[in-house]
Image (cartoon, rainbow, N blue to C red):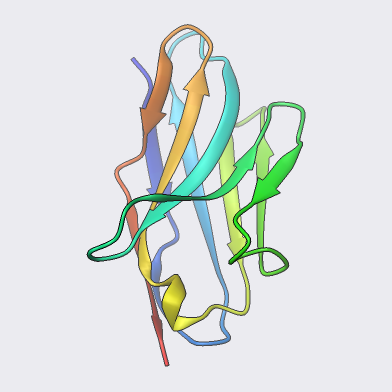
Length: 116
């Protein structure tokens, strides 16, 4: 069993910053890729940022230059640093990881609200 615990969401004014974190736990855990998705009300869940075990990253065009994904393999944790936040970034943010032995897992989601 793999468990994910997300933290760091909240309410912030436009132009502000937030950092999300997602820590994975479980026995003999070995994680391949990790990612952040988001889902705004009435919209489909979309990929925000992705990072491989080796640290290669890619981003949705809408967040390039503003968001940074990183990971600490020793802590099985992925982070999302979000700067210059916009009201359209408002969504529930979910972390996702691909674990070698047990496949894909989702976090519980954390709300990010950006006020104008």
